[in-house]
Length: 366
Image (tube, rainbow, N blue to C red; front, side):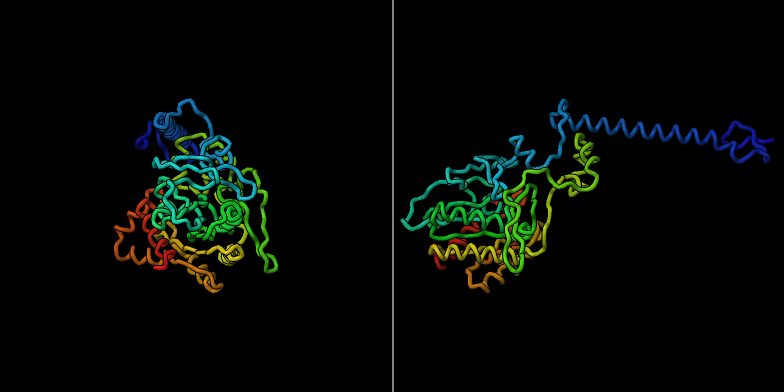
């Protein structure tokens, strides 16, 4: 009789094969328990470290919430508006320290300038025109005001689609009676016109028998649309470690209710809405200018801008293309264009100056 190597149990050929694995199964179970315990201990340690780092050792609030939960908590930059979805709060600050302030008319504040006595300009659009991540005086509407020497009112709102920008423009036309209206559009604004929810519920338009139909007004205040496994996500939302990992590796699933898309007619819907706004301007003897604003490919690119610009030009409207010049400049001077954008992806003060200069040249006939 001989012992099996690595075992104290005598080994014989007649021993049944079911006898030996019993001790091994126990060892495997113990090893799995040890590994599991080690992983749990490591996770607990990392969780404590992250809680100390974020200063939230005693906080057990969920780390992911939909937009209106954040608004109700008086964090974030938006307040509810039944017709537009949201509007900026009276003031706020971006993570980079830049601040914004709104004036009594609901436009973003910036310093007044000596004027020529001519009429004002109303600007509309999304975060690029509103001026996310730059100071009040650094937005392109503020810098445009200095260049042309006439009042410019910044009526843009962050995260707006073309649909919301047009609806807000129709509202502000009656308030400000401007001499000219400028609508700044990036490619993503056209996609947003397809959404009923973009981190908050919003109005949108459908094409029904060839006509625009406004939907989702008043904007709901219901919870965000839920993705897959909402219970699992909710349970994990109390963990800083889970938030740190999943916000990077599965951001689309982790952040609930990012978007809800209703159709794929963004270009046609946007073009028709722009034509509607331009017609309202024409009836009030107001000049209308559409400015297509480019962003580099790594920030989303300009895919929808070309078909939209062509469609709007075919309607006889005035279009200033600033996407193609940006692409050309980026190919020739990438370092220059890199300075046009801040870390969060919006135009910097330098980039806003570049936009303002080219818009001023168009307005002044150069």
